[in-house]
Amino acid sequence: MQIYCVGGAIRDELLGLPVKDRDWVVVGATPEQLLAEGYKPVGKDFPVFLHPRSRDEYALARTERKTAPGYAGFVFHTDPAVTLEEDLARRDLTINAIARAADGCLVDPYGGRADLAARLFRHVSPAFAEDPVRILRLARFAARFADFRVAPETLALMRAMVAAGEVDALVPERVWQEIARGLMEARPSRMIEVLRECGALARLLPEVDRLFGVPQPPQHHPEVDCGVHLLLVIDEAAAAGQPLPVRLACLLHDLGKGLTPAELLPRHHGHEATGEALVRQVCARLKCPADCRDLALMVAREHGVVHQAQVLRAATAVRLVERCDGLRRPERFAALLDACACDFHGRGGHRGRPYPQRERLLAVLAAVRSVDAGAIARRVDDKARIPAELHAARVAAVKAVVADGDTIVDDLPSGGCG
Image 1 (tube, rainbow, N blue to C red):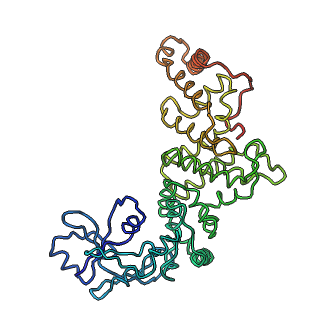
Image 2 (image 1 turned 60 degrees about the vertical axis):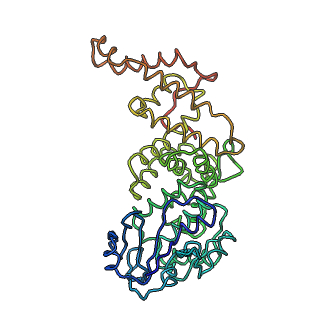
Image 3 (image 1 turned 135 degrees about the vertical axis):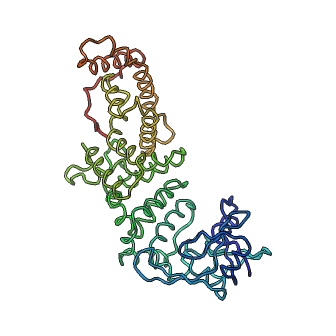
């Protein structure tokens, strides 16, 4: 029986990166042997065991054969005769197909170290095409290792997989899982770029894909289109260390612009209402968690109003807080402002510039929350008037601490202009 450390741990060690988890392959053993040594079985589809002390995962060397479309149609074969090279051959990328023996020697039958040096994502074998999840995984790796490029032959294979409909067989939960993980990497824009290059973005997120080529309004960022602006915004969110709900909201905030009639371009008047409906559609299809969905909907609907915070009347600002349930969910209201700041900084020449709208609306929120709703309810005889009286008190509180903008504008609808 021989044991090798494999996969991402070896890749990250060679790149000088910290290793979070270690995976192990056991060659020349049977399940009975591992059970006799105290390993605990956890694998459902093939034999995987937890080490009795470290709790690391140990998998018996295996081969696999595709039996149906999609990522779940595989039959796995384990046997003491399966070699390490055969096990590594079933892996996705050469940089993930390197093993380290107990004596420290590296086993690299498919050129993974050379591809690490060349900063190249290259598939190990044509078996890459049998699992469409590998397209998502490669795109996610691109977001983590932003200086890597996709080998031409691998990109061609990915395009063929998309054309063959393999991506269409992915279940929403797995698509969401990989996209969410990619959004949390250092350069999420690279994930979107790779998915677009191979054609998978148009199948998985057509609402995002159609933004590329749509011109931006002149006052926003005319030198790039809406799709490129989106890439800048999600990278701003990553650079700021924003959590997943904010990053998803940044990804989806401008979807409505993709449906602007050609005769109106480059103007996008009223795109927020359309965008909100598209965000709801995307989140339902991917089965996004409620906190991610709700913030994304709010940002799509309100970012235009937030950007005008410096010139909003007090009553309009109060209605924004009330509409966003800021009194009960102040942390979500702050997340809305964070996403809007990323949108602002993702425009030409805006990176690093102040975004005073955030501080102004946080002051509005604090003033609104300072109003004692219970006291107002107790002193108003006509209970039907309580909402109006409460709103008036909140407006007065805001006026007491936040001066109206130099330019007074009429009350805005929920969408504004973003």
